[in-house]
Length: 279
Length: 279
Image 1 (cartoon, rainbow over the protein chains, first blue to last red):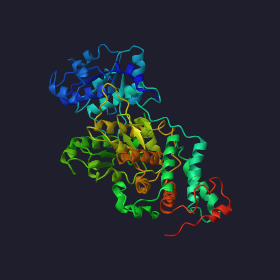
Image 2: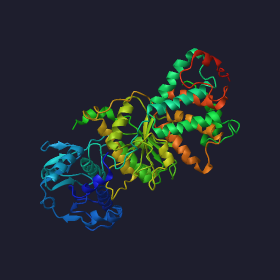
Image 3: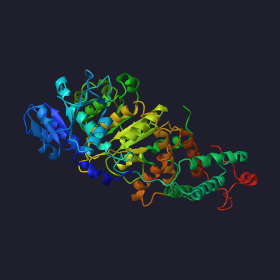
Image 4: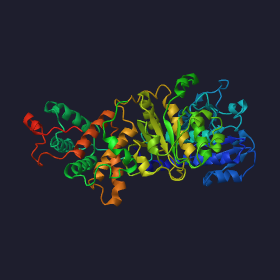
């Protein structure tokens, strides 16, 4: 997976986010925060109801100050998009079919390609209550809409911006680079290390008469080896397991059964050691 | 994009969303709303700070009543995941590298495949302030983390649930959501079955003084649980392993060390072994 450093060059630029007549300062602030989370920074407002600057927006932005401080305010939507080459309009409703419609992932990929070709781009988001008018949508090039539960489709404006911003960041990652950090590259142990564990366990079980009747031992061993080989244990895991088997094998219990505190569940310990009943 | 009608069959089921010690009712409500937006419905809470039901959660859910009404509350995380076969833990921080790490899109695809194979799945989300503890994460199978702006990485809990839910819905859209993965061939045991093995082993090791010095026990237990949870053992495998541990734990060696050849045993050898006494 790509390392975190590869993402650094993606954290500037990106499309402008344009809110048309936003009402609540809290929403503007949460939009700014969502943008910052995914590396967008250019916020434009068309006729915000409560004017600008807005202290509630600043509070809700929780330190996305660079977005809030750089916010530009416009009297008309036309003015807000005048310098842009390409504009998406977001809408939850099917319109009269006069524009191409994309999902957020395809839209983000299209924006990534256009911005890479030095086009200035933006995404329009409508009012909290009723979104964008058809006239406003007609000013955009294409439509973005979100895959949602048709029975519960109302996304709020900050959520809509969040998803678009998230897809923007993802669109710049290598196909397998979705995570900023990754788990350990798990290297399975060698077969002889695995065999060592298997032999150790077989010997310890044999010494206790686990394999009975003797005629069934080959089948039982097969089952045991299948369980040990299936997970692809790493060297470290095998070392830990060998220590566990060694402890069980070589040392006697110091405490009678049930007196050792096995964490939360020691009351049930004896019962749990019984074969589990079939459900 | 796929038409809206195609989504209808996807709007039930999906992974459970499990919030660990959520503090603000507003956040729980916004989580419920985000889930409903993308067709998830099963919410579980572990020790919500302000109890349950919570009127602030109901208000913030803005009509996601079916999620709020169906919310289940648990005293422990173990209980909250006991019936699940597979669990993701979400975290923003790199941990000590003991679990596979996925992005939300890959995680959603994996969940889609597992749920399609009738596994019960869940996704853990931590507290607003500091997320999940390492011990809590050790109870999960894999980690989900989000691609974010490294300079502004703090997602709130409702945003994190929103993105995961969104990817869940997307993962069910034809055609590309269905091709890359097929159902895993093996059904992992439930978490309570896994916990049974873990408890049994812990008790048997504790009785032998394996955990020493005592101060290191929590770390040693974490490591042990990581090894036990990583393979995704099936119910059958766990039954076999519990039998192995039981034999090692309860029965003494009948033969001196080294007398039993660890390789393939002949019939004589097996016959000499004492049968395991019946209890």
